[in-house]
Length: 249
Length: 160
Image (cartoon, rainbow over all chains, first blue to last red; front, side, top):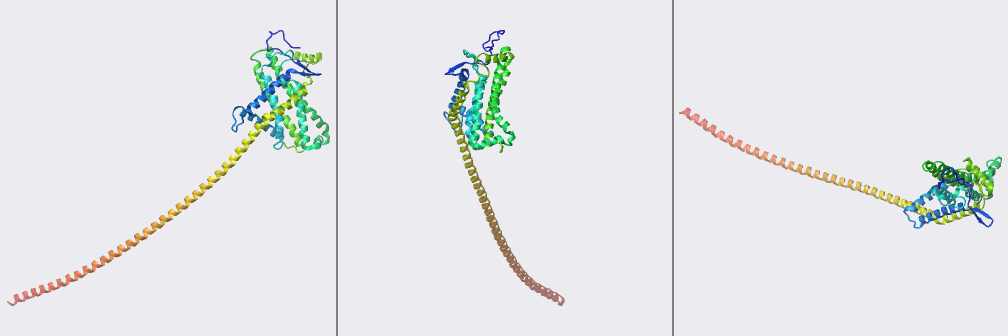
């Protein structure tokens, strides 16, 4: 299934594979090995950076601590804006990890030449260009906002389905399905499309022509991470506040 | 691109692959992500968040402290200004008093001196008048004597 484009001389980078996976078998279950390999890399990077940042915490931050404090302040602001001053603190780890994981995944896919490492099947890429990853993150987001709503308002959370009028009940129920769907497909589609565009351009006109698209890809990758985290925080904030008393910011 | 998509779809049909191949990767990834969130919470969010909050507390307490000290300094400066004004006023008063006293003394001594001068002048005038009278008296006597002699001489010359 590898699209080898035999018309062109076989460059090591100019190979396009879509829908190919490196399957690992665990019991009866099949998993995508290439996704896990890159996601472990991403996780390792995040943990390593966190350890470096917090190894020696100073009152006046320098170097890595400063950088990660900047990141943390950014995440806190994001969560505070969407969830609200009172409730945002317990959600910072979830929203922040969403942002950091997606961001580092996307940029690792855009910046690290994974394709130089050959696998028996499939190819290494950003974990977020696999639908499983994005659906997992989106479903976790759904769980998170359900949990937020229930823990805050109990069974009264269900009242949001008939607000502002019971006529909207079907739409409100539908929303619970469209939210994870749109979240996961937005991220998946953007990242996959970006990688495909870059790969096709590299295949057709190698070297300098794909560079602007790659830079654009870096930009969209960062934006997608921000969008995912912001929407997750917004959903959580919405279910904490309730539809009726909607006062964002 | 069409070719690529066709191939992708084909891959799904042929055997287990494809773009939208959902399998056990999904739950495992979710679990992995939750574990990552927990680990990062312990490694990153908590310690750094604590550091940020502590710094915020430190800064705000320092700020309050500094504001207090500034207020204190301003109060002291105001007090100093007041004291300065007070002592300036006192100095002015002392100077005015001294000037008044000096003026009084000067006036007094001037008046005394004038009185003395007046008295001396009067005395001198009196003495002068006395001497003038005396001189007038002796002059009269001499005039009398001379006139008598002239009369005598005239008489004797007539008689002879």
